[in-house]
Length: 539
Ligand code: AMP
Image (cartoon, rainbow, N blue to C red; front, side, top):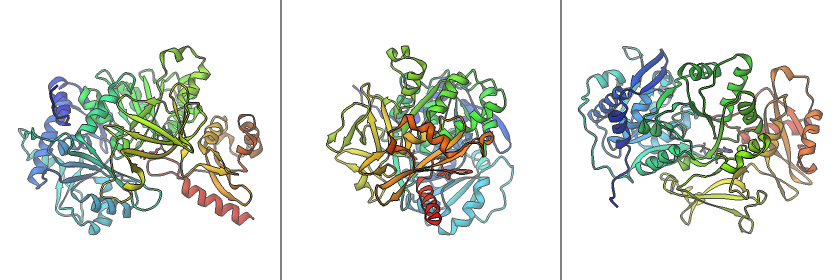
């Protein structure tokens, strides 16, 4: 067979050639705008030309600090297709971490949304490699800024050449993108994505037994474009000619519901917190959600209660998936097997509450106390992965040695696998609770609590214990209508029939809010410190 390069260039070229009329619907600071793929492709070439004029060369890193919108999408292709590296920066990280990763990645140019300017102005004096800033704005003129040299995105495009041609000799193994993932301690760790990895990952997103993304879809990536490339959806969507709906800055559950209704979205993707918010909105107001064929949920465990509410109350198909920044991210996805469709509704939801089976193209092994675990749904072990869209190292980081061994990536996630090959995340290795030498899964307790009608959110953490080393404590946020009306005893009684006695939390603490990471996951470390301090003070 021929060895042709799998590069991103073929994706944007295909959208322009075969789907010039298909649309990108982009919500920006000044409202909703519509572009055809023909326009997007032309603007993308202009951006590539503009970046070249600013001195961006092959292998240079170009950082983006931006929400999900059409300009960010153009950067997704202009940068890698011209041979440079798209570095998406998480705008919710601390200013110190942003400065660290801009310097560590050695970004040459930064593309910045105008509302993120104040954050960058505070830290730009620490940048050691940045030579130019491009501001993405709908306004005709640039906002006042202390950054320099600074360019207006639209003016740069207007003065650029749309006959620009992408190089045709890009190596498929060359870096196309990079993204930093938060570490539990220390600085974020960088992951570099190759053209080949992104192309093959997009292929997996398009498989019917993957997420089944196709030309017929109208896709709304709610997951930020700075979080593992919005799970790769923008790449797959452009390649397949899928209509893209970009939710833009500071969206709310109401806005997401309106976008789904108005644009007739068929597939959307985000973390459980987003879907909890949407469910609340759907309880308050009626929207037409009938266009949805999949709500893709990952990034943290989807509680059974959320799945039940989507599927049974609102008749919206729910798709649970799992992955990491290091894995592009798609690893497993919870599609029922044909013969599982005959099971009862309850059994089917139980299967969907697991993260799913491995997508074609990857390999996994699960290492327990005594080597590889049995597929019995009970034995636990750490998940290790390998495959063409799994990272092989952290970018210039000695922590590579901890996670990458013998050609495998060790995820740090503890899982079980059942007889059907469905994987269930039990915990992060660091979040498991070890009570009297036995493991308790915080995720199982959280999921059970979140099926109680009064509970909005629940997080379970370990607290040190003299006799048992560690014991679980649950932090619970009640739904507004139940605040003050539901007791800890009631919740414990609810858990009792579902777990061994020693699994039950020693205490249930009611809170207004559970602290979350920049991408909406429970901040377990902060919560643990907070709970431990609280208990110490009381004793
Ligand atoms: P990130 O690199 O920020 O995407 O975080 C990856 C981590 O999120 C994984 O190592 C898991 O601990 C967690 N995670 C992702 N998806 C799921 C899921 N569906 N269920 C449970 N945990 C998940």
